Image (cartoon, rainbow, N blue to C red; front, side, top):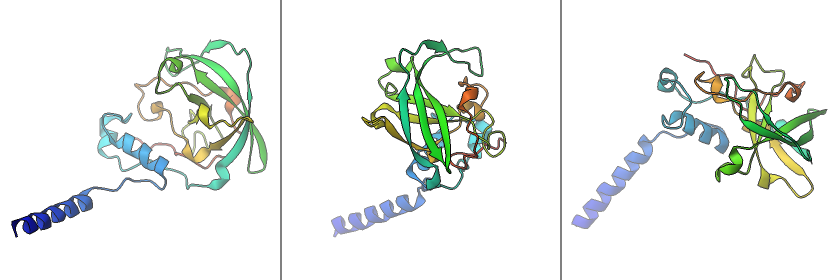
Length: 204
């Protein structure tokens, strides 16, 4: 009988805990993970007052129109250069290649980069850096542009790779000016409205 009572109490406790725990905000796994990291004070770029009121980032509706297959043409013998940032910091990058793709019937091109500092970091060595601006920048999306991470292991043998603009994010500078963020090169402007991914952040 004691065992049965204990079991009933345990089940009711678990039930209460599961109901009390707030569900992660976001329409997709990507959005939920991003919101989770921004809600966590140990990983969030938000200022204290913004973190206090944080309910979740504002995203454009998820749209399959902004998922496209790009063709990567690697840049051979690319020189290492210092990328401009929002501060005096000048991180080292190389142009990894050019991506050719179509969005909404328009043929577009973006240059993708590889951080030379990240090559030494086991956690980030497979990351490629894709910054861009578009015709929503400075209005519905952050004026400094948005970023997309492309993984080396996601590039197929024929040089094709899926670009999902729904999984784009703002540089930390969009939330807090204490950060140093790479500036989007002018040549990485898309002459189209990319209504996908994260929107501009309304600071408190």
